[in-house]
Length: 294
Image (cartoon, rainbow, N blue to C red; front, side, top):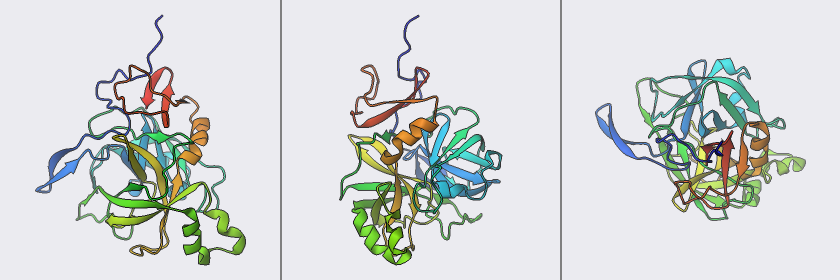
C-alpha cells in the first residue's frame, strides 16, 4: 500500500491561514466575506457567548473563561462561516470540552479546546488558521490583528447586524502590562501576567474588548495568517492606557498536542504541499496520515 501523503484531498481546502475574500449583499449593503474564515461563534443554549477559531476539521480553539457557565458540551454549539451577528445558520454540536487544568484565576492558562461532534467540510468561507510552533513568537512592536464583532456590552442586539471586523494591535512588553495592571493584584500575584500571555495595544479599528473573548489574534508571516494569541481580557473598554491580554498560543503548543490525541505536530510542510509559504516555524497538525491543518 502506498503511503498516504500529508496533504488534503479535499479540493476546497486552501491551506491554513489563507483567506478567500468576496462580497455579498447583507440587508441591502455590500459587505466583504471570507476575510477571516476560521472565525466561529460559540453559543450557550443557543445564545452567543464568545468567539473561537478553527484549527482542525473537528477542533476549535477558544478562551477557558468562555466556558464558565457550564462544562457540559451538550449545552454548547458552534457556528462556522459566520460573517454577522445575529445570523441564522447551522449550530454544530460538541462532543467534548477541554479546559486547561491550571485555569483557576481567570487570568493565566486561559485556553480551551472544543471538539465538534462531527468533522466539518471546508468551503471558501470555512478554513483553518495556522498555529505557531513553540519558537515562533511575535517580536515587540509587531503589528497584528484581532478579530472582533464590534458589539456593545457583549450583547447581540436582535435588530442590528454586527459584521465581523478587525482591530490592529501592536505587541508590547509584558513588563508594561504588569506595570499598568499592578493595582489589580497583590504583590505576590503580579506573575499572573507571565510568559503564557502576550500584551498588545489597540492601534486603530473598533475597540478590541467588545464582545470578543476567545477570538483570534493573528499575525501575517509570508502571506499566511498565524494565530499568535487568544483574546483573554482587558481592564476597560476605550481606555488605550490599558493593554489587551492574549493567551499565547505558542506557549501552549505542547498542551494542544497532548490533549488532541489523534494529531501530531510537524514543523515542515511536505514538498508536495500546494501552499509553499509555510516555513519551519509553523506547526502542521496531521491526523491519521491526512492533513487536517497545516
